Length: 116
Image (cartoon, rainbow, N blue to C red; front, side, top):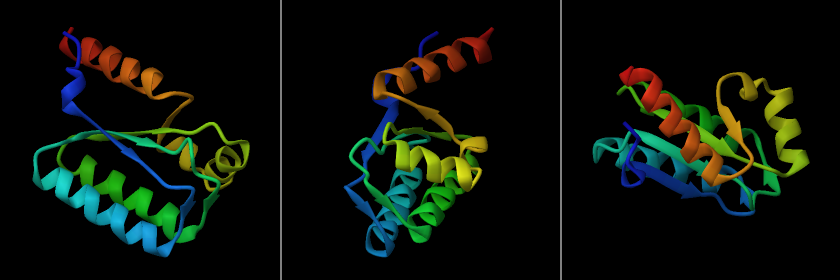
């Protein structure tokens, strides 16, 4: 059984993810969870700058989604952003993908494995 595409929420982040962006991201994820949306893809393809508050917001988003049995997958290709995720060991707690389509496919594969 495939995960229906409409059950996956894609949130695109802006070029700069800082304190202001982080607050909005946390609120967005709270609203999604409250609305019953538990499968998330965070599109970081446009992100060029990610500070510690942005990293904290990603962790908070993951925590809030995991509390209700959901998950968050990141999509990132910028070498600097990938390096930050690696240096902070966030690549150990998030699944990181090169494209949104790849992340969607992994949700579908996980759904098939869980239903078997």
